[in-house]
Length: 229
Image (cartoon, rainbow, N blue to C red; front, side):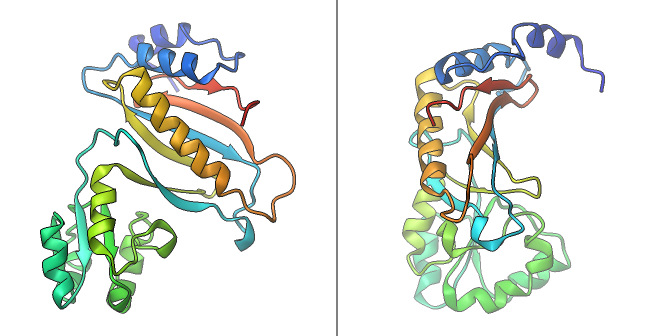
């Protein structure tokens, strides 16, 4: 894969054989984020888990202390008095059955997170083929299937992110923007790592966090030392 001049220049600043301390890695990622837009800073965590086994799945959510820097649109499936509660809490869209054809047939996907009350999961289940592959299905572990829609919406708007293993047993999550201060990124990174360490499956034998890499949207990856984790 051929990279542009900016990427090549940025890549020269990174020693690919070095595992950097977190603070140094964050400083380097900020330095190599040279795009004209405010790049997202992401963490990629390769685990020793085997996600094919249910007892080695890693999934959950964490509220980043400084948010993600992104305005998140929330869709809520609710009925009865929960509709007004969701609207009051700042949900961008609230509805029930009528949302199914809109999403299924009209391709309406102008939202980032879906929250549902437990009594609406039968309705949401009909959208599994659309929402599932996009990682948008509500899930109790992530706090998105709940009767407390106010808390769910507040957490999401405050910077709550979900983490889960992909098919290669890697977790990919944003921890902020290149415009964030190093301290803000460090606080978000620490909160994420702490949550993921707590989520270690008890069935896992051997090393849990195999590698941690920080990267900006357009920049090179910077390896973080996992020794202290």
